[in-house]
Image (cartoon, rainbow, N blue to C red; front, side, top):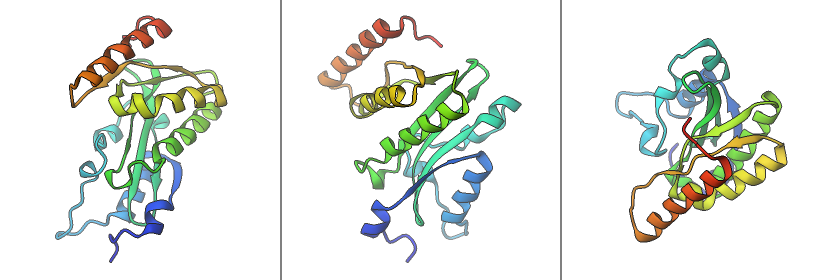
Amino acid sequence: MKYLKTFESLNTYQVEVLTSSQFQNLYNEIYPYSWDNVFSLKNKIHYFSWDNFLSGSDKHNKSLRSITAYNRIDIIGICIIAYWDGNDHYSISYLSTNEDYMDKGVSKRILDETFKYFSKTYPNETLYFSGYSIDGWKYLRKTILELSNKYHVKIREKAIEYVTDWSDDNRELFNLSREIIKKKYGNTDY
């Protein structure tokens, strides 16, 4: 049973920097299409969208990378990075983990590979971030700042933009993130 998750498959995975075509080949290998089994990664990875892989300018297409964590049965996390023409910079579009693999350090491993790749490929560029989710701010921002220092990558962050639960704590964190980002970067309209 290919999709039976075992302890080994949940905890053993690799992380690779893939081009669009390499990602599509991996996807087709892990989730082969059949009429009785149509799989949608969007159902497991919240921010996943094939729209990220659609053609753009030559610079966008050549720079687009999917830093992908996977094992033999699942794609377990993705970070999309590319040059975005409309904003005229390199940016992380999103980082998202398969819901079956949450709280196992997948995002941190993907981030490490992302920063390592970016530091070698674009050593004099700034890496821009889309807005944080509440969980991203709570659990990943510290790692992002540490990896920025470790790999000597200049970054430009945005505050929390993605909130699904407007609890009092989340509202407070949302507002605090805006104060911190404004103090650190000034205007973040990019």
